[in-house]
Structures are given as structure tokens and as C-alpha cells.
Length: 465
Image (cartoon, rainbow, N blue to C red; front, side, top):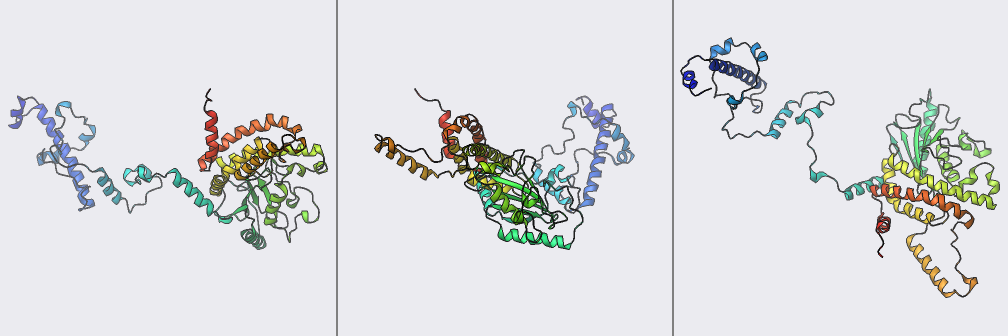
């Protein structure tokens, strides 16, 4: 409004500008009165929901009564720059808007409402406050948590169900009370008599399903590996044996464990057998199946598990083939470790993380030891023992350098020279790649890898002239 028009407006003189403003003022007060009535009707004590009366603009009561609300919908409510601030009722006030307090009062209004799932995530005052920087866990806390979960991981336990089980989508069919009682009997045996290196989970909602994992035995190319098996008790159990599937990851690391997951074992009826080797409905159990797989399948020379190959066990060609097979087996075992670390089977996540956190250093030491030319499957000496062997060899060599009969003998774990040439090209090259991948994964799980990280850093630094 121009300065010349201002006195006329004060005196009540009609003008286009003053009439527009009167209509705007009337619309504004009408909206405010509606808000005030809603707020007062909902709760007289709700200060946040109440509206303050606009005292800066007064409209005659007659105009409010004659005001048509439809005009609000059709009118453009953009305010001109010249009139900016004219309707700011808080101008000059000391009141500061508290967003937290406002949201809290609004949230109180929704306490007794049953909102559909997902609505809370879209409403700011119903969302939980974000964790502050002080609530983030340190690496030490995460590692301690992994260690505690692994420490208290039960060997046998029941879970609700398996969503990723091999036979989760395969119904067992019609069963009876005898079937249920026999499975519960097997559960009791597993709970009381499992070896320390086998862990089992069974499902309450699907008692026909079972999942087991076994740690590879020491002195074999499977040592420190984790090998998972899914089993299902068919409706004909125990007249027929359980069905077992191996989590192979597409790798065949044993003549009895196929890449497709098939487990070839006489006890399971997947291979011919005689006498006690075959399933007996009166005496055979799931515990016997698991122990047989660990003892008979995951052994120190799996090459001779292949039918007909056992006749070459005492011959040089057979031993050479067995060494080569062990190399491949250990390589596949390491790949299986990576497979489990990156995609742990359901209900065994804590075991996988804790196991490789605890055994990571020993596994990396075994990789180094075998890459140096030692036989895969032999027991890897501890660091102290290895140091003592080196010192004794040096002392013996220096004191008998003049005698050919007293030369230091090669380590008994060294691979024969005939097989070492080809082995150096394939096995070592593959293991160097796997070693780096395992080192990274074990670091994430908090394993003690300082020694190997320091060696890697030393190699990466350029040598000084």
C-alpha cells in the first residue's frame, strides 16, 4: 500500500487494495478459528495443539458470517513481496519453536491408536531417535561380542524353522506317532552324545529337518574347515535312512561328497554295503550317520575312498596321486571356508564367525606351511616347535659339514621331488590367491593376523639399495 492511500484506508475509504486485504484477513481468521475450535475440542490441556489468537488483524463479525469458504479454495494464496510479513503473528515475540517438544506431544496423541505396520517409519514423531556417535560399537566390542556368542554356542539346540534348508520346500507327507517318537529319540542321542567337533540344529515346526556342521579333523586336508549338511527324516523313517545333502558350493573335495551335494555312503543307502555298513532300522541313528561322515569320509587320504583305488595305496603311483588329490582337497577346503564366511548357513552365523576368528591364525599358518613344500594333511607345527627344529637343524649342519653321512636329512613332511615340480606351478599359485582372500576375511572377523599382515606389508615396501 502506498503512503498516500494509508490515511484513506484508516478512515474507512474504500479502495481495491483495502477490500482485498479485508477479504484476506477474514479468510485468515476463519481458518484460525477453525483450528482453535478443533484444538479446544480435542484436549483443553494440550498446549501444543492449541492455537494463539491473532490480535494483529481484526475482521468485522458480519464479514466472517458472510464469508464463503469456497472462495479459499479458488483463491491464489501466494503473498506479494510488498506484503511480506504482514500476517506474521509471531513477529517481535520471544517464543522459540521446539521441534522435539512438538513431536513428543504429537506422538502422545498416537499412543492408543493401532496404526498399520510401516506407518510409524513415515511419521517423524513416531520414529525412534537415531543412535548418537557415542553409541557406535568399537571393533574391540564387536570382536568381544563375536567371541561371547561363539563361546556359548550350543552343540545341540532347537530352532523355530529353516528358511534356507535344502528340503524346506519338500513336505514329508503323512506320518504317525511312532515316527515322531523315533525322531525325538534321535534328538536325545544327539543332545547327549555328540562329539565336540559336530554341531546340530533341529526345527520345532519341522521336526523332519536337521542341519549339522562338523569341523575337519586334524591331520587331514580338511582340518579347521567347516562342512555343512542338511538332512530330512522321510515319512518311512526309521525303516529307511534319512536323506542327507552336503553344502558343496559347487566343489567336490571328496570322492563321497559330490559337487551336486550328494553324500555317497553305505549307511545312507547311496552306495552298496554289507552287514553293519548298511542301515538297520532297529539300531542305526542320525548320530551314527554324522560320526561316520566325519571319521570315514573326512580322512587323511580321501583319494583312496574312491572304489578300486585302495589297491594302489601301497604303490608309488598311488601315493603320488594321493598327494596331488590332497593338494586339491585343501584348496577346495579353503574355498569352502570363504563360501561359509560370506554366506553362513542359517542359525550357524555365530559359529562360523567365532570359529574362524579363533582358528584363523592356524589356518593361515597351514597355508604358508604347505606352500613351502610340506605335505598337505600333515600336522602343522606350532611356532615354538618350528623354531626349535630350525635351530637344531642349523646346529647339526654346522657340526657335521665334513661328513656326507651326517648331512641334514630332508624334513619328513617334504613332498617328493618327482611331484614337487608340477605342484609348484599349480598349488602354490592357487594358494597365494586364496591366502590373500582368507587373510582379509579373517581380519574382518577379528582373528589374530598381525604376523601375516606385517609380512605382507614388508613385502610391499620397496627394497633399499
